[in-house]
Length: 65
Image (cartoon, rainbow, N blue to C red):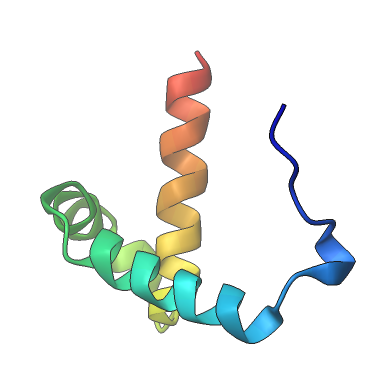
């Protein structure tokens, strides 16, 4: 069985780097770009971070159905 470090033991700078790379990959994906065009008026001045989080949340909600 795999062992995973607890959240308190994780390296937050490593997590930040992973999230930054993941966020950029998602932001450059065709799925995100299409979603962003559909949402453009609703996104306002949201940061890229918040846009990607919203995209992921909506995508997961859709998949949950």
